[in-house]
Image 1 (cartoon, helix red, strand yellow):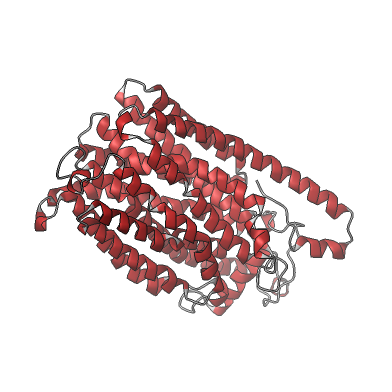
Image 2: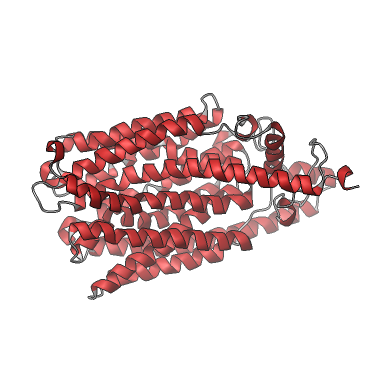
Length: 500
């Protein structure tokens, strides 16, 4: 009897994945409960062992290449052999080198993801090829001889990195169901946080190369990390899978691929070209309030994230630690962010609630900024503030990414939504790179007050998003109550129940 029945997928049966609770029909062959469970486990393990590590390592190296300039700077603050002294940077030169990266990075995110969505170029070649170019440019940062050369290389880094974070998040969104995605985004961001964590250790080790080959120690940080990026890029080109309907046979068998496509359709509805979600005009996607409101929440928490990434080594140096020890002192901060991200995101996903955990994380973030603004005399307390900021900021990023993904339907929506959140959200770097004014150190009143203000704004915006999604669900329920079963079926293809 069990052989003749095809049960509702085990995971999806306990989720409100489809707006009306129905599972839809399936053309897949009937399986026993035991066989289906075994198949689902195989698919889950294969995705977790291939998709998450590849996308995570990719993002880790991007984040490392993006933030290693902070470690390079801290090795020689105020010294003629340091980054600023060697390249004769003006007083605002370091800040300019930070924000110039984000001009092309932000502008190219959405177009790059739409190109990836066309599936004309295999994802491995599209992502891995640009990653290889990024590694070469990363090395060029260590070889440049002038301030203008540094700015030019930083601008080109933004050009070639633009499609990579958004493309990686899009790949995760395409391979995981709504409820699965949040924890995978947590692992994804934890890989990113591991980049600066090991970058501090690497910078500490590389400092001993000062003078080798006629290069200062800060140059070797860029050169070594760029070489690592080029090496890993070759494996990304080779191992990165195609999109689920076209997954390679070495990755998923035909049965596993068909089962995965069915699970994703159960979770998010039909998304292919010709479906209701697939035929939505691009202008409707670009003006959708869900994308913009949740992106603004991401923007607010990224002000803190980019501040930690770009200025924590500098802040630690000015707390009295030597530049070498400051490199190592950043590592526990990033480690705390990794532990907090996984713990909070896993709990949020397990309970299928997002808003309460986001507000809790924002409160942790607020504690850190308040300590910085108050400028508590004890150095240990101000160091502790960095832990509160990291533990509150980074869980928000993975939860917000999963929250947006869960409230969008259709490849077009996911491509634009993921790219816009990563792209526009990273505009926070324009703020963080310009509010920590060199002449205001060590108190940095402008930088600390700005971080506190955006954290408070994030609390308000997150609460507003929750309220609007609740109201939207109630409005949808009232509309569906007045429809026939056939009308509801068509209506639910596009208008689904929001999660929060």
